[in-house]
Image (cartoon, rainbow, N blue to C red; front, top):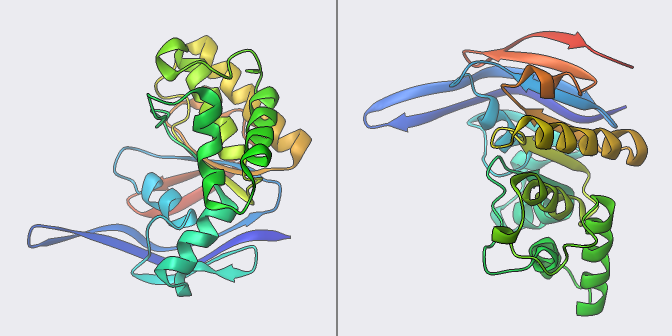
Amino acid sequence: MNLISLDGVVKSYRRGEQTVAVLSGVSLDIGAGEFLALMGPSGSGKSTLLNLLAGIDRPDEGHIVVAGVDIVGLGERALADWRAAHIGFIFQFYNLMPVLSALENVELPLLLTSLSRAERRQRATLALQLVGLSDRLEHRPNELSGGQQQRVAVARALVVDPTLIVADEPTGDLDRDSAAEVMSLLCRLNEEMGKTIVMVTHDSRAAAHARAVMHLDKGELSRREELRA
C-alpha cells in the first residue's frame, strides 16, 4: 500500500531574473514502512524533494498525497497543523536549541498539541529512552557529542509518532562510528516500529542501510535499486 504518491511534481526557484528548474515532473510512489534513500549530486533537487514531502515547501505543479491527503491543496494553517502531526524531520546539523536540555528539545514539537505538561515530559522521556539517552535528559547540546545530539534530534522527530520521518543528510556532520550508530537507530525505527523513512544522503555507507535507493539527477528520478526486503 502506498503511503506517499507524487504525480508530475515541478519545482523551480527565482534567482534574480533567472528561473532555475529544480524538479521536472517527478512522479514517485513510496509504500508504508519503506526506508528509501535518495542520492544524487549536489544541486540535483534531493533536499527540495524532501522539503516538498514534508510540507515545508510547495510545488509549482503536481500533486503530493501523503496518507490519503493531497497536501498541495491545504491552506497555510492546515498545512502547518498537518506537518506538526505527521512529519518528523531530522536535520544534518541537529537544529537543537542550545539553551534547552535534551528533554526540553525533544518536548518542543509537543507544545503544539493539547497534551498536558506531564504528558509531554513523559513522551519526551520515553523517546530519549528509545534512542539510548535516558542518562542524558538534563544535558544541554554543548554537553553532548555530535552523535548524541543527532540521537536527540531523532528522538525529537519520533516524539510526535509521525506518519513519515524525513532525514536530510543525517550523518553528514558525524564521524564514522557516530554515523553508524545513528543509521542503526533509523533501521530499528523502520524494522521494529514500522516507521516510513525517506532519507537524503551523499554517503553510500548510510544509503546501504535503507531498503531501497533512488537516484536523482538534474531534477529527474532515474533508477530504483532494491537493497533488502
